[in-house]
Length: 368
Image 1 (cartoon, one colour):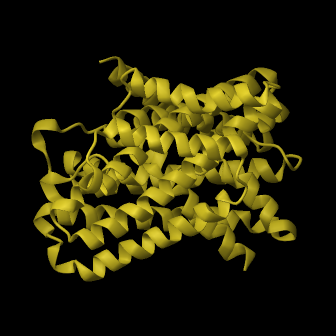
Image 2: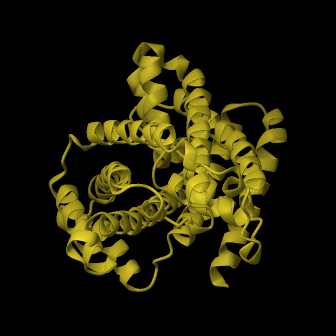
């Protein structure tokens, strides 16, 4: 039972903000290229998560990535892990803020009117209060919120099957084609590294089963992501929006769209609060910053980035996935080398080169 729970937690947590970007990106590059990315980067994600699982099993309990990096690679690696982790989580909070604001606007603006910024501020205030007071029950709400969201997805698939068009699924927006666009977003969508130590602790005496939980959890996440792409893109086609669910309004009844938006809102809100709580604790416990200032950095830096112009959801998750998560993956690969023989470099070296090239691409793309 613990094994099934571990698989469901890993898959359920991986499926967060990133999945909402995939239908739009698929409409840009084409379903064939997206399937290639999902399975190639999915395989890479399984390997890197497996590496992290092995590192976790070989490292004292109750440590996380910075602690792993210090234990196996030294203090400089620990500092790099802190920087990449903090920047990555700040970027993830920003992504969820953009997404949640759009979902709330789509849900309530037909009744109350108003601009996206008004709904984003409401979303921000409520999530900031949850992060400040440290609502512990949020993790359970997060898990069940994601479960119910995908139950709603299945309901949409069954009820609206006739609206799903093969022509829409195989659509490509040739004018905006960018072969490398999916890279950072897919990495973001398939990353669940922070959960590996948690699942190891959950398994208790069965911790060796982590080697089974990791690939199965990721395979479930990959298949659900593909299912989500087919449903959304099949229904909305050229009108697919960057946030996926918003574009459904023109095609489905208000009741079905509201159901999807409510569960999407719950899934993004609980994930934002969970990440925010983790980030606040890093500032507060690990870096010894006061509670209020830790909360302020966690909540207000993403808001200020948004107000400063960082409003493109696709760009934000691309940078977080292609740069911050890639740095974490490089550290994990180097740690795996430390606990194994030099033969593993046949696997780790190409992966490190891949991640370095991805970082370079995302930086150049962002500058442009």
